[in-house]
Image (cartoon, helix red, strand yellow):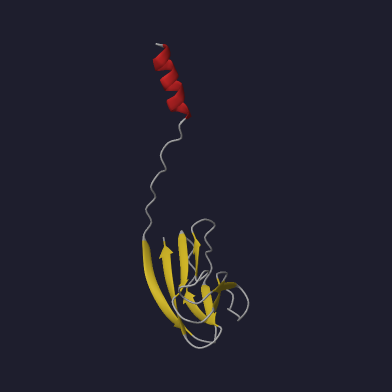
Length: 114
């Protein structure tokens, strides 16, 4: 009886396994240059947003429907380096996404969930 009570007490203290969450996500890409470009329109029920720099130039992005300006906003380093991506899976911005390349043309990969 004591063993069963002790086991019940221990099991009640163990946190439940993490719940799985499934989101519908899709992947797109956009070529950007040295002028601000709309990458994704605003979406009021966005639940996930990932931006990945797939080019060799630094890119600056905004996620609050503002025009992107070089050397301001979210900085994405060149592809394959530390800082080449940003992921929003909590407090996901609902505004439109604009990006601008510091130099040359670049490609931005976008993963968006609803």
